Each structure stands twice: as structure tokens, then as C-alpha cells.
Image 1 (cartoon, rainbow, N blue to C red):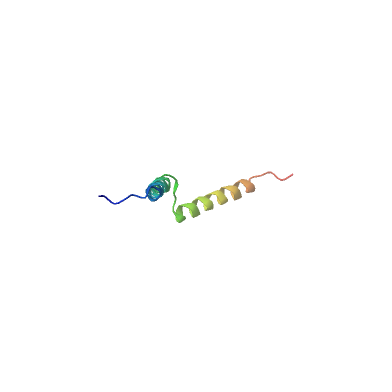
Image 2 (cartoon, rainbow, N blue to C red):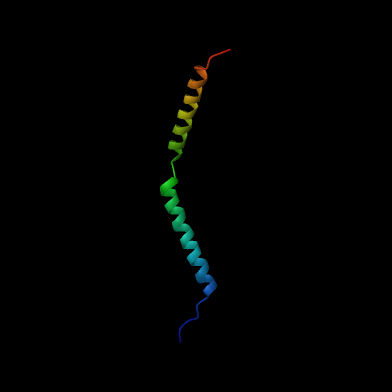
Length: 58
């Protein structure tokens, strides 16, 4: 006779595997390195400073 299968454990293991694969896909699609984020922040800050410098004073 075969060993009984715990269906709750099977369901939870499958959900965990699905969640992990979805997280890996999102990391590839949306993930950026720390350096990329820092560079983006620096560029945004520089653009903001340049724009503020060009504003006309009243």
C-alpha cells in the first residue's frame, strides 16, 4: 500500500513554489540594482536643481 499524502501540505508547497517563481519573474522585470537607483536619484536631483536655477525671480 502507498503512503498517504497530506493534501494541505501539497497545497501549501505548491502555493509557496508559485509565489517564489512569481517573485523571481518580478525581480527580473522590475528589479534595479542599488547603483542604478542611486544614479537615477542623482539625475533627478540634478534636473530639479537645474530647473530651479532657471526659474525667473519676481
